[in-house]
Image (cartoon, rainbow, N blue to C red; front, side, top):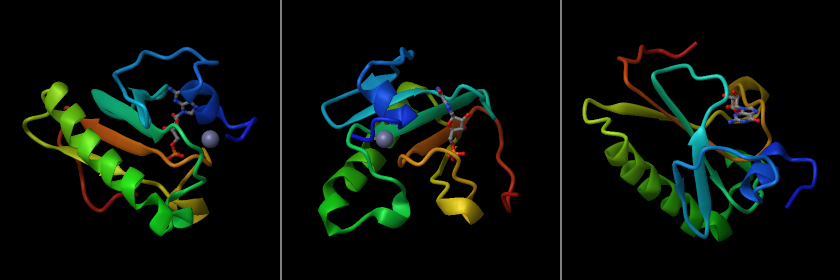
Length: 114
Ligand code: 5GP
Ligand code: ZN
């Protein structure tokens, strides 16, 4: 756990959020600044700075997050589709240094992203 990490604090329950999904390994909650009708964040409970810091030891949690994201998309009835985004590092637009999946849906997405 990183003591000054906002997503670690959320994962520990120190900052209250509306829990969309939770299990032993991850937590999903609404983004504070939604960019789509559905905009959720899915974070591992253990601190991992970014996707760029992932190694073979994170294989299980990375797979778990993608499987849970599909479950959440079904729960949220995003049957027309959705987008999963993992902003990574300064060029990737990452603003919180704790790995997180954005789950965006409820409107058509454009491509390429900005
Ligand atoms: P990033 O820019 O790193 O890909 O995404 C970070 C996301 O976290 C942003 O979309 C931002 O709105 C969201 N965020 C930042 N602080 C908080 C917070 O305290 N609570 C919630 N729910 N979302 C946050
Ligand atoms: Zn953290």
